[in-house]
Image (cartoon, rainbow, N blue to C red; front, side, top):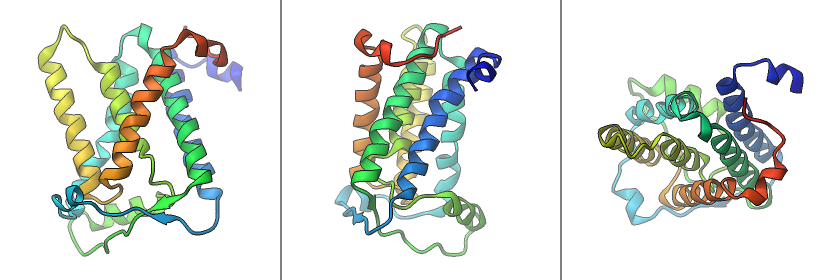
Length: 206
């Protein structure tokens, strides 16, 4: 497996190792059976009414993450991979020890109804807190941030905020677990930059 990974283009390899670990965390969380704690809806959540049309902004997340690996400077690739792996590890532990869910609204007929139904087939309702959608959006924004390009930074920030708002509007997460996800991304990014943790990772940046 390692030999196969080394033969891949460096950016693709980092993407698979970083983002792929998130898929492992979701899979681990889905293996736990039993009741999950229902997250409360806060006043901040009720400011955004449920709207299936938000799925389009929600799905743009799956463009932002690959863009982060493709466009971030070479020297940040290893950090980004490790930060996502740490996010997946920490979130996976929470998913197993303390599963959470929320009261999902019924999906009514809408132009985006079919796409949302397809998304729900692959969703794991017991893996709400912390939101990896929030953690990875934050890490992608962090990786792409460039002080020399303020206009690009502004556009990236608006894109990230639109994704986070769409997550709540689509009711895949609430303010509570989305906030926990953002804190997870901040913590994971900070830890991944610590030299003491580099020895725990065996993948080298080409």
